[in-house]
Image 1 (cartoon, rainbow, N blue to C red):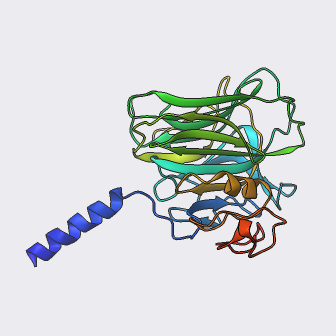
Image 2 (cartoon, rainbow, N blue to C red; image 1 turned 90 degrees about the vertical axis):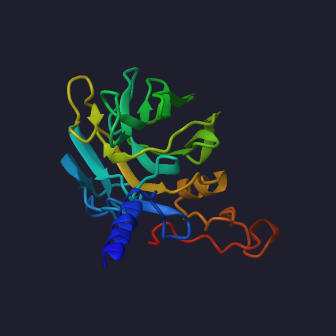
Length: 277
C-alpha cells in the first residue's frame, strides 16, 4: 500500500509539471470567442478569467461579439494547460478603437510563473508607434523579438488579424492579416512555467495584474486562440480568413481549392470558422 501511495504521488507530480497537451486535432489549447462572455469556449486548462476589471463584451466584433478593453482595464486567464512556453501560436483579431499614433502600447502579454524580471513578461505583442512588435523571453532574460513597420496605420474601426508563433528549436514569426511580416530564426531555451496571459497594460505576474500610469491604452480583441505548436503559414492564413486550420500533418487548402485536388489531397474541406472543436 505504501509503495502504491508513493507511486500515485509521483504520478500526480509528473502530471502537474507536464506541458499542456491539446485534445483537439488542430492542436488548439484555448479559444475565447468573447461572443457572449469572457469565459473560454474551449480550454484544456481553466476557462474562467483569473483577473478581470474594465473588460466587457461588445456585440460588434470581427465575428459575433468581442472583448472591449477599457484603458485602465485588464483580464487574464491562467496559463497552465492553456499555453506552452516552449512552442505555440497566439492568434486574435484586434481593433484599435481609437486612432493610433507614435506612442507605443501593449496589446497582449503572457507572464512567467516565477522570474527575476520585474514585469515577468514571457510574451508580449505591442503597437510600437509605427507597426507591431512581438517577443518571447528565454531562460537567460534574452528577448527573441521581431518588429514590423506597417505601411499605413490601421483605421480605428478596422479589424486586423495578428498571429505570433514561436518554437525554441526554430525561432519566432509574426503574421498580420494572414501574411508573414517578420521572422527571426534563433534557437533558445524557452521551456518554463507560465502563470497567466491576457490583456494588461503594465504587468501580468503572479503577484499583480494591472494597467496603470503610462501603461493605459485599451482596444478590442476577438477570437483569441492558443495552439500547442507553430501553425504553418497556410493555417495562419486560414485563421485570418475566418476558417479553421486543418489537423496537424494535413496542410490547409486555399479557400476556393476543390476538395481532392493535388493541392488539397489528404485534407478535408475548410470548416466554417464558428465551428467549435
